[in-house]
Every structure is written in structure tokens, then in C-alpha cells.
Image 1 (cartoon, rainbow, N blue to C red):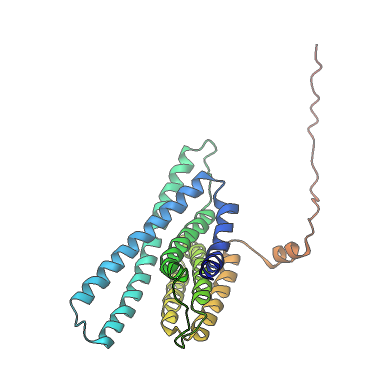
Image 2 (image 1 turned 60 degrees about the horizontal axis):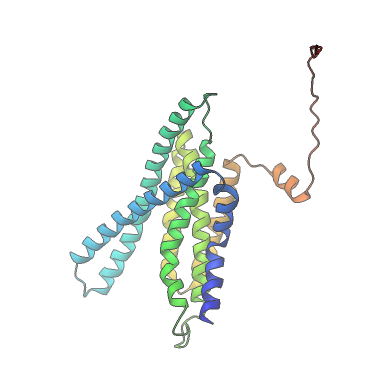
Length: 265
């Protein structure tokens, strides 16, 4: 039973992310490098947030449970702000790298677009965030023990898996929206990304009241997904064409050169 729960929750949490990695990232070495570097940036933000929370806990009264809970909420908020700060720093780094790649290329164009870098960096933030948020839960799912035997919710593991999947998608969508907002200087979009990240993190404190946390988080995920889709250049026409499975005919006319091939001797 423990192995079934472990593999089931693992596939739920990381199955979509692994598929995206294989289909859109793994075949391009440059995208793989961006993915790994993005994970490193997220880890640095986590390290700084952990240090701040650790110091605040040791400087406070550990016997005050309400104070410790408040410090936990404070640590989550600081972690979110640091993640978004390092996302901005990563945008600046990739922007410089994009200019350098364009300079080195023969045609003067970068081999990867800013939107592609935004997607890959967002996916890297999501994957590493999901790994650190659910790895201990997956380790406990193997056993021994049974969740819910003392009256607790038996849906702890599966809910954590679906929450992790939502967080992976959210970071991917936030990356696309964030990079586009930085490029176009849309500060209101940046504020909405940070605010939605704070709200998502705050909703997790409602657990184990899973209906109050998981449903709003998935509403935010769907909303951000739609926003990121149109930000990346998507349209309703593309969606309808994809659902109809019809390939549009190419109405363009190819004009051949009037020059004749020289006669071989």
C-alpha cells in the first residue's frame, strides 16, 4: 500500500512537469542549461529565506505558540518575496545572456527567444519548488503508518500531490507573465504575480481544511494559465484549430525564379 501511494502521488505531482521537460526542454542543450540555472536561483532564495526565519525563531520566545505561528507566516511571506526578487534577477541575467548570444550568432539573432526563456525558467522554479515542498511527504507515504487512523483526513498525501502539481504549473505561468511584464514595464502585472503568489502561499495555511485551500489555488492556477497563454501569443483561434484537429491549408503562392538552370556541358 505504501509503494502504491508513493508512486501514485509522485506521478500526480511531477508527471505533467516531467512530460513538459521531455517534450519541450530535454532536446535543447541551451534550455537545459537555463533550467538548471533557474533551479539554482530558486535554491539561493530558499537558503536566504531559511536563514531569516531561523534567526527570527532563535531571537524570539519559543514557548509562545502564537508568536511561532506568526513567524512561520512571516517566513512564508519572506520566501515568496525573495523568490520573486530572484526571478527578477534571473530575468536580468537572461536578458544580458540573450544580447550576448545575439552578438555571437551569424544572423544577429538569439537562438532562443525571451518567451522561451521565460517558460523554461518558470518551469525550473516550479520543479525545484515542488521537489522541496513534497519530498518529505512522499518519503513518509512509504510507511510505516496509516494516515487518518486517529481521525485525521485520509486525503493528506493525494491532496499534497495535487497541490504540488498546481504549484509547478503556477511557477511556469508566473515566469511567462513576469518576464513579459518586465520586458514591457507593466508594473501592475508584476504586482499581480507577486500578490497571487502571496495568496497561494497563504491559502496553504488553511490545511487540513483542504476544500478551502485546494479549490481556490486551482482557480488561481487556471486564471494564471489563461493569462500566460495569451501573453505567450496564444489566441482562441489556435485553441479551436487544435481542438478540431484540422490543419490549415497554406494559401500562399510560391513564386519561382525566372532564371533558368545553366546547361551542363
